[in-house]
Length: 245
Length: 221
Image (cartoon, rainbow over all chains, first blue to last red; front, side, top):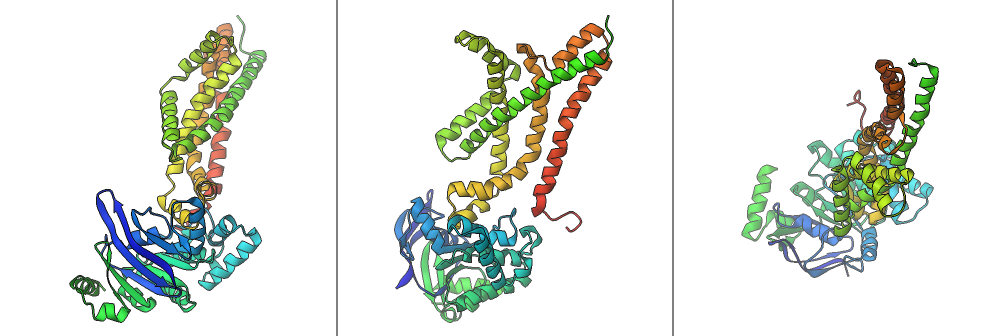
């Protein structure tokens, strides 16, 4: 039984079609990397899955929630679907621990002490327990991104969406974030990773989806996608990113 | 002719009481109205936002003096009598509300879009986003312009003398007419204004420092 079901999803911005009938099933515990050129609709797909974007056609079901605009649905959906952004988006007025604790008190209705304790445990898990009192501005990019992951995990999501979470990082910091993602994969967290980094997709993903022109163009295991691409578009894409890497 | 001595000085100090009261009226009335206007502007509701926008434009472009006249005589024409207290409260609130509303709208909108997205993705309702994420960050942004305007209000309360409030400026003119010592009289008046405004500026600096915890100190940076 798949935990994420996307069926012939359509999304337009004005006259421009961004998603042109995307269908994608993700099983619980799967780690799916979504790759493709800029503008191929990868990020839009993620944003539709947790209701940050309205959709123009098709349907999305995540962990039993049929995605709609109804506030009640969105709230329940977003408890089950965590999201981590390229630009971290930590709350700058709160410490690392408060960042992780706040959604738990607001959305889950946990007590302050309980949320703080849970936050501390999560920071421990991403290797940042000693930095719990630090404000985001005092943390490196890699550290901020790990706090952002801990913050998303605080709601105990069933699915984690990662939107180019290593793209804004200095190269030497990619590793520490990747480690956290791999640890989550090992604990069978279901994840959808939009990424530009082939090494990231290769190491973390069990399946790779190549998007092109608003559709799923080709999919397979990392080995199939990166070593034996079939369609000319994917061949070209893999060649382009190999040169860059 | 009288000379400028202690009784005259005390008379001016007493009048300064009105300057303070009128300022407080503007802060309270204008603050409440400004908060409502700011939230209407960013509510995403076209009618609320449009209404607030027109309100702000209208009162920002009307001299406070005209506003005081209009409300004062307008009340009389509609049969409510010439109540200077009501008139000054309404006029100062409308005037200060427009400015506060615009300052706070700007501060709310200055919070980066990513903060809205992140809190939405965490399941926050619109109210919770404002309460826990957006407002705490915009307060910090809003403090300097808010205090700047509050200082302006103190000075602008002198206009209320036109409908009969004997506040500091009016009292200074009165004393000057009696004593004809304009330099001493107006220096004293200026000093009193300064004493009223200066603590506000100090408070603003302290608040800014206190709320800027999230920025690395210049030494560390």
